[in-house]
Image 1 (tube, rainbow, N blue to C red):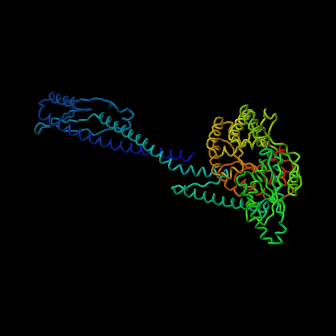
Image 2: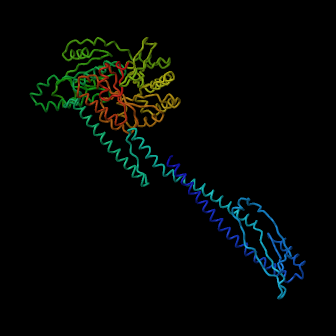
Image 3: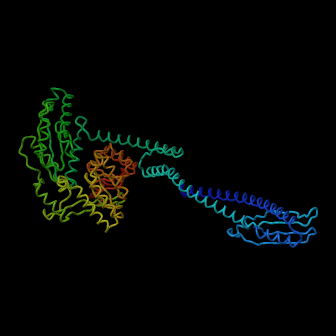
Length: 623
């Protein structure tokens, strides 16, 4: 039984006891008062009647007339006129029932006043005795009316007390509800703090829970920072802050193998031709300072570009990977303008090589083209680098796709350690009548972004997913882009579609990219507050570069993390990467999050991931 019900039962019992006590006391007092008043009335009336008879009655007939007249005029139950020898000279009696009081009330509260007696005399001669008993019916009516009034006032008082008590209890329960919500959040491994209430007992509980929450968050933040530092030491070049060669090539292979996000892009290599001479002439420390400056300016030159990856391939070669970009001329122009016009880099002799790639291009072929340009040879494009479509052609393809509803949702399973199905990943596909082929998301997604249609595509994919859920009992995951998360109008349309089908919405999972979730955290937090109450599950996909910010997710109520393929591609042979991922699983599980590996190719890789603590895997190994 809830505390509120117990409080109301206690209040009702107290009110009932108070009513019975008040009614009993009132009845007893009123009964004694009325009996006393009737006794006095009886005595006064008897004396008055005896005095009248003494002065006016000359015989028994006249006395009887006076007694009858008195009886008829007053409210009497009985009047007896008895001679000195005990003979009853006159007797009048009335058997009346109270007009209002019920019989059970008369039996419950009997009113029996003492009769009034007076002596009738003529001079010194005693003529008889008058005994007079008043009719108590009016007393019962008066007492019954007062009891009813008492009960009515008490009921009215209880109603007022109930209204005031309800408001008062709500004031008490409100902080209690916050305590319950905080406790439930802790059970769900969401670490939230609430303001301590004014009630002393609740304040102690809340302060204890807040202290536990802060302590847990501190421990998790420390662990996250340790993992982030370990990952930075493992991945980052200490001089430039770029990825080391192995990690950069791992990301390059992941981009070339997967076409879910971008099926094309470009790679730019920047070579410092005179690095050996600089080390000899100005010293290693000064040369490293120039390299740091070169790295910083490269980042500044491409600061407005999304998803750019930087790596140091060897002592003198820096690599810049730009997924989704094929305009090499503009990219090289940005780098040239920033690097060659900066006086601090005047000591560096820089050389550039660049190549465009398509999905499934061999990494060795792409690097070979860049090396040929760096060495001054005639460079051929990679074997798989087909000629891209023009912007006008993409405009026709996408416009027709929305008009003719040519979008499709392709499902891929995500399985757990026992090969049980967790949910399906839903990937967007365009079966274009204009292009005459089925296009993966990586082909059309950059053009969807450039035309500002990302939110419209998200809405279309959600509509398709809800339709699919009408034919299956499995859960289905769809991607959510930056406009849907950060644009209020797009979010309103998105949530309205979910509210329209609440039963199916509970089987929808929403993937938010890592860059959107952490780089636009206030908007992402607002998105979670609106969408999670609709029953959906929300997770972060392509987790890779934001390890240090995982602790910020503790109060959002997220459900899972999807780890980028770039972190797991060489897992079988990299013990340090295994340690990092094991620590990630520990932190994620402490936050109540599942961990899923993306695009796992082999069963041996998925088996190792499960040993490290992963909860699921997608890709060929899960099919």
